[in-house]
Structure formats: C-alpha cells, structure tokens
Image (cartoon, rainbow, N blue to C red; front, side, top):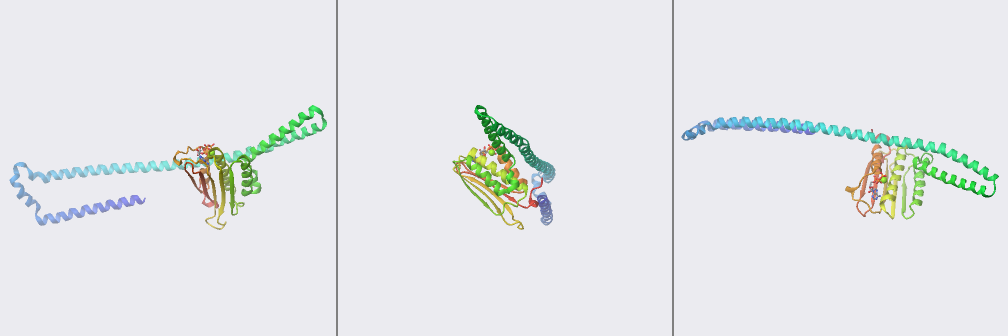
Amino acid sequence: MDSQRTAGARSGLDLAIVAFVVLGSAVLFTQVELNEWLFARTRELEALQVDEAPAILFVLSTCLSWFAWRRYREARAEVSRRQLAEEQLAALLLENRRLAQQYLQAQEAERKSLARELHDELGQYLNAIKTDAVSIQEQVNGPQASTVSAIIRHIDHLHAVVRDLIRELRPVALDELGLQAALEHYLDQRQQRMPTVHFSVSFEGDLDSLREPLNVTIYRLTQEALTNVSRHARAGHVTIRVARTGSPADVSDAVTFEVTDDGRGAEPGEIRSGLGLIGMRERVEMLGGQWKITTAPDRGFRVFARIPVSEHRSVSP
Ligand SMILES: Nc1ncnc2c1ncn2[C@@H]1O[C@H](COP(=O)(O)OP(=O)(O)OP(=O)(O)O)[C@@H](O)[C@H]1O
Ligand SMILES: [Mg+2]
C-alpha cells in the first residue's frame, strides 16, 4: 500500500517536472524567436530539407510517447500479476501451516487414546495373567514350577515394555506431577540409556502452572532434541535448560527451552530435515513462539525456543 502511494507521488512529481520544462521552454523560445532563427539558418540548406526537422522530431517524440505508454501499461500489468502470485503464495503457506498444526494436534490426540487403550486393556490383562500365574505357581512343584516362574518373568518384562511405551506415547507424569517432575523423570531414564553422555540439567522459575499445550510442547521438544543427540551428535556433554522468565502478570512471561550438545554438529545449509526438526518448529510456532537452530561442523548443535506463556499471544491457525 505504501509502495503504491510512493509510486503515485513519484509519477505526479515527474508530470510536474515535464509541465515545468515545457512551459519554461515555451517562454524561452518566444523570447529568442527560435523558429525565425531556425528558418534563417536552414534556408541555405533548403536542398537538404533540414527545415522539415521539427516536424520529423515531433513525429518521433509522439512515437516515443506511445512506446513509453505501452511499456508503462505492461509494467503495471506485471506488477499486478506478481502481487496476485504473492497473495496466493501467502495463502498457501498459511494453509500449509494450518494443516501441519492440525496434524500435530491429531497426532497428540491419537497418542493419548493409544496410551489409554494400552494402559486399560493390555495392562489390565497382563495383571490378570500374572495373578493367575502366581496362584498356579503356589500349587505346583518341580519342573512345572520353574515353567510358571519363566511365564511370570516374561509377563514382568512385557509389563515394563508396555509401561515404557505408554510413557513415550503419553507422559502420565505430565498430567499428575507437572512439567518439571515429568522432565526430571524422563531425563533420568534418558541418562540411563546414554551412560557415556554427561547431562547438565537446569530448571528455572515456576514450570508447574503452565497450560497443557505448553507442557506437552516442551516435553515433546525435549524428547526429540535428546533423540537427535543420541542418533546424530556423538556428543560427550549435553546441556538442557528450561526456564520461565517473567511472572504470570508480566507481558514478557515466556518459557525458554534450550538443548545444546558438544557433538559433531552439522553444516546449517546441508541439514536434511526429517520430521523431527520440522515438528519441533511447528509446535513452537503454533504457540506463537520463536525457534532457532545454531550449529556448525564439529561445533555442536543447539536448539532454542522461546514460547509465550499467555494463550492470547499464540499464533492462531
Ligand atoms: N544434535 C544433532 N547433532 C548433529 N546433527 C543433528 C542433530 N540434530 C539434528 N541433526 C541433523 O539434522 C537432521 C534433521 O533432524 P530431524 O530430527 O529433523 O530428522 P532425523 O532425526 O534425521 O529423522 P526423524 O524424522 O526421525 O526425526 C538430522 O538428520 C541430522 O543430520
Ligand atoms: Mg530426529
């Protein structure tokens, strides 16, 4: 809009300059009597028809004006075409973002219901089988007793697998204990699975009164960032920092999330995005946050996000 106004003002100025130059020339030529002067000079060259030059120049300038007018109209049509294309592109990007957000919400809902099914169905049946096996174990002796013991061990193993799966799908601790406790629990387990990596963890501010989407987002960011560290980084040290800056009444109330490792890093322009980094960015932007990756070969990898706590400042789909 502003650029249109500037272009309009510039055309007006150009027109004023042209009018001023033409008027000035008209006054000047009446003073010096240009035509008489030209006539006197060109009479000797009558054989060359030089006195017809003004008429020819007039035709030339008319043609040039016509040419300029055509170019002007073409340029305007091109600008309109580009504006339309830009508007369509912006609409497509918005639609794309909306779809990505819907996908993440559907994925979260699906995980939640899957975790519930696993817990309520599989978990309960495993419990029932174990109870039966224990009562059989009490009634039998010898080789049969050791077979039943093996069955109980298998059930315990299955139980642990299902529990891990449920935790991965839906962090129950998140609902029951709040974000900080759920993260501490998750990081403890991660540390056990990555014994060669040294974890430095820091939590700052009140992280237990955040709304549900923010809790889930920070939890999922932590999961994906640490999965990436274990898959790609070959790091010796990883720092996880989650901090709430500002108080609930504060407009700058936000949660800062940061995972930094000292691993092999990556060339920023050559990162082949899988779904992990894209999903992380979508989750952050969905809540109106900012997202940044900093990395270089052999200089580690850092993911950073800053998400406003207040719902009103989130990006609407
Ligand atoms: N901590 C890290 N250190 C080094 N490179 C990393 C790190 N995290 C991500 N990368 C690079 O960024 C790429 C994209 O990561 P992203 O999580 O999007 O995909 P992915 O982990 O390969 O697959 P997935 O879709 O299963 O997450 C990785 O393939 C890797 O090259
Ligand atoms: Mg990944």
